[in-house]
Length: 371
Image 1 (tube, helix red, strand yellow):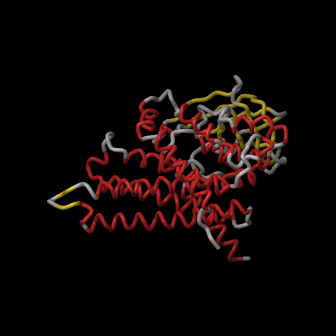
Image 2: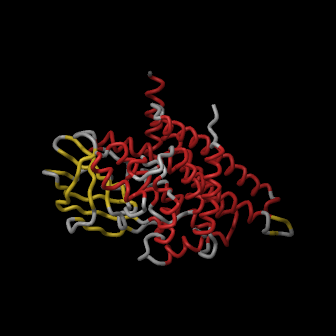
Image 3: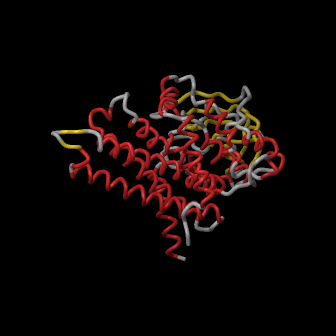
């Protein structure tokens, strides 16, 4: 079985890398960090929409390209490598995927063409406090088609046009689609380590809410959405981890200490070797997740959890060790190392922390072994 990208997907990946090399240098990421009012790079967002990336997996009848999830994984890896400061994940991995899976035809016709054109930004508002998503922690409620409650932290919540929201409905929980443009939605920024992917607190006071899926299926649908997104996020993390390793390697091959390249010292060699091994393990798990997502396999919950855990840890280690290899200069604002350090932390939390995904992985393995 071949888990590698096809020739066409490798070409897509190469084109994405060259495109982002031109349109998303480190200076573009820094520009968003330096200006709290920007939230994201709007020019880059328009260019990405023009490339058709937001339409990759959307059905043809709703303005999409009708390609597979593996194609989107190839794009995700390059977005992660470039640290693209845009709400692509919230819109493509969470909103669009949930609409395709659970939306009505009317909901799809309203939102998917706008998503494909880059005219609508989405967010995924399921948690109400830090930590794992559990039913008891969800207090937001929908009654008579109106949503009341608070969601936080919500990645890209300050710039989103529409949200997928998990809320109580009757004795259970359901998933809802909520337009964020009304006066019954209040937004407040939250401080994060990576302001290029900002977060918000959303307060709803009777906002109109349209159900996604069936009544009472909210927790199951939210978990399914997280599994799909986890695979795509894992590719972003793999891309970022690879770039952090390259930065460390390149610096080690040019920096001299005590008359020798620091890359010739065993301590540096061991660091880089350990990062490389972690990155390759994460890549193999991400490929497994991509196959399960593309095939609609029953293995997806297990594969997604494995990919998420491996990629989160690999990116964190790669970003941390890249800082160490750069030494004192690595901790300065002038170096680019901190950009990956920030993004590694942000991506590890955006769909639930590593601890929660380790628990998911353990449960999946336990169920499989018991079967």
